[in-house]
Image 1 (spheres, rainbow, N blue to C red):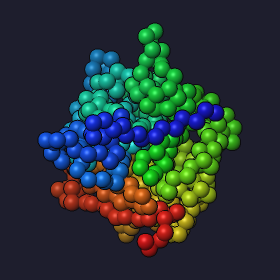
Image 2 (image 1 turned 30 degrees about the vertical axis):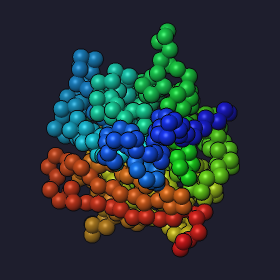
Image 3 (image 1 turned 120 degrees about the vertical axis):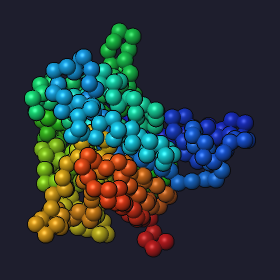
Image 4 (image 1 turned 90 degrees about the horizontal axis):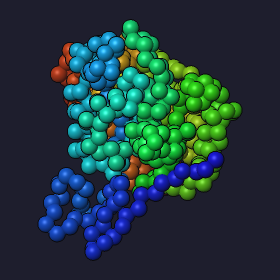
Length: 382
């Protein structure tokens, strides 16, 4: 398998450091202000900023989607809709990120190219060149719920949007979303090695098989093993769509299939796992591949499925505690994105919602979860 591996490279010209596709440590040009919009000029070195969120754009209400029930399209009072996805897009821009990790389900309901162009691109397209996406089930699977009946795109619209198309109308074989018959890739940002994975194994692209030892998913799992074996970065982060450990009591076959990835990442000392799919925010304690709390060697899982389309409900016990005891904190009443600041030997996170869901109390916007931690390979206590 060919390894697709991107590095963030800065090019210096006439004393001004410019970044191609993303901005690392840059210097302000004469006359620029520190808060100018693009490309986020800085007067001093800074740690890399990675924004992260998933589950974003409503299906556009256009002629092509006339058969889709109104409750599933932009404008529905039960969805976050355009207001929510624009709010999280503006929030991400205000973070001045170097890159943006998108955690799947960028575009509902089946991720047609025309849907990406008619909804997602209107809000998130402003910083498309910074995005490093992972696909979700809504980019691959059919949608036949709630009176809808749309054929699955098997990733075609997703790849056409991110990788582009050839002159004859076919999907370009590789690009921003990885190779168009795979959808997984890795890249480096500052001191970090970052891995984007495709877990949509219940699709024709994977032979409708979620067995991580055979077929396309087996190839991806072997690629991950090889990628981690050659990873020399101080810190490592991986993300994909369906989480292995659920905060809404809604485990999926895809999340179970990712058990193999958890084992590899744990064995190689990875530091963070990010997921979407569950339309909530949740942070879990560092865990081993069996979901057992492991404060020394475990990997924290963050679920950030609050990009804009809709919200789910965190699973709680009758006394109000989280049903999954590994969930430290979470919220399910507002939309928002996460800011990860990636240092040389650790990281900090800051999650704040920016728009309350319809009918949610005003207190929904008072929620915040922030903190910091060292990478496994960093000297602890330094």
